[in-house]
Amino acid sequence: MLPRAASKFVEAWYALGHVKDDSVVAISGFNMPLTPEYLIQGLYQLYRTSGHPKNLFIISDTFPGTPGRGLDWVAERLYKEEGESQEFIRGMLVAYYGWSKWLQKMAQENLFEAYTWPICVLASWFRDVASGKPGTLSRVGLGTFLDPRQDGGALNDLAKEKRTVKVDLVEIDGEEFLLYRAPLPEVAIIRGSRADELGNISLDEEGIIGPILQIAQSAKSKGRRGLVIAQILYPVRSGTIEPKKVVIPGPLVDYIIKAPPSKHWQSATIQYDPRISGQVSVPTEYLDIKPEPLTTKKLIARRVLLEMVRRVVEKGSYIVINLGVGIPSIVSTLIVEEGLQDYIIPTVESGPWGGLALQGADFGVALSPKAIIPLSEQFVFYEGGIIDAASLGFLQVDKEGKVNASILPGRLTGPGGFPCISTGAPRLYFAGRFTAGKQDIRVEEDGLKIVKDGDIPKFVESLYKILYCPCNAVEEGREHLYITERAVFKLTSEGLELYEIAPGVDLEKDILAKMEFKPVVSKKLEVMDKRLFKKTRMGLREELLEALRR
Image 1 (cartoon, rainbow, N blue to C red):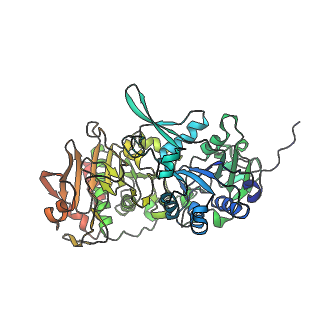
Image 2: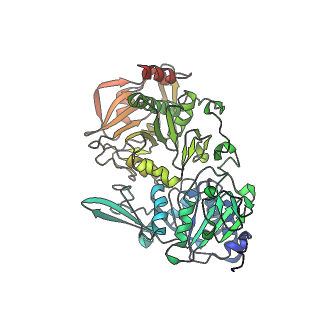
Image 3: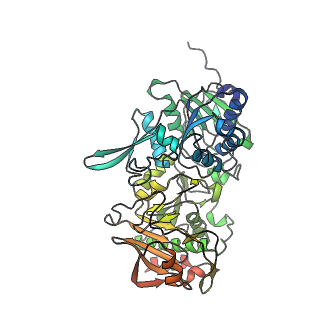
């Protein structure tokens, strides 16, 4: 008889001491949800005291951290204390650098190879390479900076020179695809809630179900003896975790480390709230949501919500939508404010359905969601166009409707889930302010008052980087609107058409003169709905119920 397996619970220093120099290290995390913060800090502290492990190539499904936490905590110390002499990170492939100004500085100064892919591609890639495929084949990214005919996802000169991560153009039956390839993980650093002595891990108190299983599988694939280290909160006896709640079977896990609660938060500002993990479900109307102040951001989000309500009326039943970061995320609050939560079901890339999606650094989790599905499966809804509509932010738009969502000189944030959602959603409502820069624009009862406009145009002749190309979108019948506080455009076969403006603005002075190209101006130019400018509720629930009764 084989001897009983020893417990896999060890101290962090012992487990992390097995990580070798030059390793490819996969780390889980969607902002703070599922980020193994205790292990990330421990790995860096081990390097600082011993000089090892060094020259690590880090891959993550999204980004493990937020400002001052996770990888950003590490990057700040690398940049301030070691600068050009840093040897901890030789390369990185993540979906979003936006939470770390320090990693962005390091990337711009070529202190490591910086690459980025969309979340959906990275989540699929872990599964694909774990099953023996050479990489991930996808239409996401065609015609954008991810396309090898442009940057191939390389964010700095060192990455363009080394090309450790590759994106190839592939043609199948006359149709173009992108093949995403990267080095296989040798170490997986992941996180869960409970674990037993055999290594079985559950996600009871986590707010999302990220691709931690696929990350672990990718480190063990092809007969390799990759290392899997897991951070958890609660060690339990074997046999006490219900089999259906086991997300990672024990044989995949080498070491388990119990983290202090201070290094295991559900999101950036919330250590633990049972409403986030679904252990307690509170009706949305009892979430005590404070109404958003009436700013240009709320005005834009309200205009997006009008389109969602129209879609419910057209369909005759509830709709499922996606809301991106920034202004679109405010729509989630407005849905509750207007009492529409039974008719418009918001989803977040990380997996929550319904409830109240949190904003800012807490983006990724929701209060009292109706369902939480795996992140990789959530993106099937987006890429496959199974949802009804999506609202996403923008930094720049050109005359053909192409969008730059997140990359500017000195700002290497990465694509996040943007390319995946925009590629598949049947209706896209891009939402953002008309200009950038310091501005004073007031929302008043009778319209918009522009006291001081931003001096940076966002509707430009040429994009700095293309993150979305609406190739064949009009022919495919996909609806595209570009919604701002003063103007609404729609995509036509002739490019952008201006068809709605806010009361109080001057067409020539406040709109056309602030664009680097001349759009088509509709012959039936409309004025925005006056309810958008009300300080009280818009009354959309009552309007919707009346329309559905007809």
